[in-house]
Length: 246
Image (cartoon, rainbow, N blue to C red; front, side):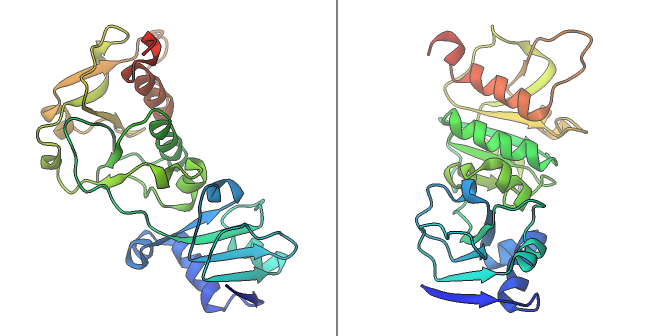
């Protein structure tokens, strides 16, 4: 692995990592994304490139190149205000290719909040779901804020951006809805696609139209709704049978 020192913001590698953090289109064009912080790198064996701030011990990960940056240049490059001093460029994980109606998925419909998305990715991974599906209009799961929140789960949870709802044909589509069938009596099928709506708009009418069922979380009437990530966590816990000792 070559080790090089970078001193200028005009360096092509600095420009590359900055553009990867800023542009969704560029990430998919290059098939790469940025991991920032030691926790995001946990469990990785290999990345494309590593960037460290002077004085920081590089992670024990294979890479084509290791770049060291002065503190001022690193802070100007990093996406966080109080960086841990390490970033890496990694290849995008392969997308989920086949949606199997016998398996369990969570679908995020136009979810915009990156913190919520990252938390839901981690939660879905923790409960053993087979994949996470996204509709158009959702925030990019490989944006820096989502990746920091997912803390590596984006590599373990197969992801797929739906081009059409026809891709859900044959699946048990379950929509989270305040007027749905309440927990804990709701009977979960062995395979399903659980749909969580955007914070502002809820579930799209098109998803409601193809849904096989709806599910609701009972709550105090003084509250209109829950945070999307909290709702997803409660529903995934219930759906995997843990609340019944399964």
